[in-house]
Structure formats: C-alpha cells, structure tokens
Image 1 (cartoon, rainbow, N blue to C red):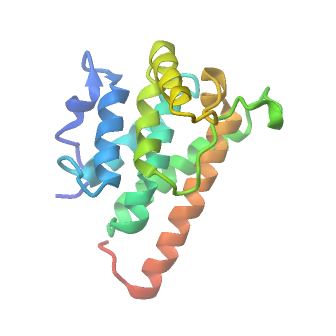
Image 2: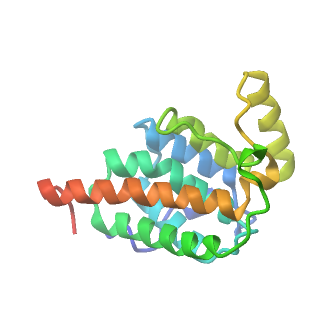
Length: 191
C-alpha cells in the first residue's frame, strides 16, 4: 500500500478527532529519529505533510513544520521512498513560500527565534514540537530547558514567527535536496 493513501494511525495524532495532538506527534518523531519509529513512519510523514498544506501560519503550522524539520534526520538517513520525500518537500516548499512573504517583527540579535544546533540532537528538536501545542506547554518546556542551562530556545512568539519557520523550512529543504541527490547517485529509491 502506498504511503500516500489514508494514514491508518492518524487518529493517534489528533485530539477530539480534528485538532493536532502535538505531544503525540513529538513522541512519534522522536522515536523515528532514534531509530525506534512507531507504526508507519512513512505514513506519518505523508500525513504531516498533507496536514501542513492545509494550515494557516498561526494555526497548527508551527508544530507541523517543526515536526517535518525534526524528521528530516530520518528522511535523510533512513527514508528510501521517493513519494514520501516528494510529499515532504512539496509541503515544506509551499509553507516556505507562504511564510517568506509574511513580516518578521524580530531583530536578529533579539533572541526571540529558537536556535537549533545543526544535527546536534534531532530527538530534542522533535520534543520541541510538543511545546508548540499551546502557550502553557511552551512555558513549561521553556522553564525545563532554562533549568538545564539551555538558553537558546527563544520566545513563544519567536517560535511561531513566520521568519523563524521559513528558515526551518529552507534548512529542511536543503537537507532533503542533498538526500535526493545522493539517491540519484546510488539509485536506492522506491518509486
């Protein structure tokens, strides 16, 4: 069955049948990037990509885009299905195009945008998705990270800022393009 058909586990990632359960998505993506994917990781990636395409920037888009950003590790190192990669890149490119056209009110040195260490801890990046569920989840997560000495996690508004999200989308697209180029060299894909 193609990963592009209906995702059987989608209800596991929804609250009340329609709202994204960012905590469950974060757990699934963390498992995926830790080589312990729950269920159908390809189906989850396609579902996240499809759901991102239907979201306004102020809705679920920050959590969905950040989930795909964190999952890029899995896509680069484990994914070999061209359809799934195309779903991810299509959704990220559409989001980047929309977000790039929106204003970013933050100065670069202000520290509002979260800072991710490039490839340092994809599981921690996945955990960040849950903090984007709502402002209360953000505050709890931010206090926990500050207590651990991690001061580079920005503000609630900065984490959901179009400028920050567009930059995440660009970085993920660049990494996925590199993976796709490698696939072309060794031909190890499923079409």
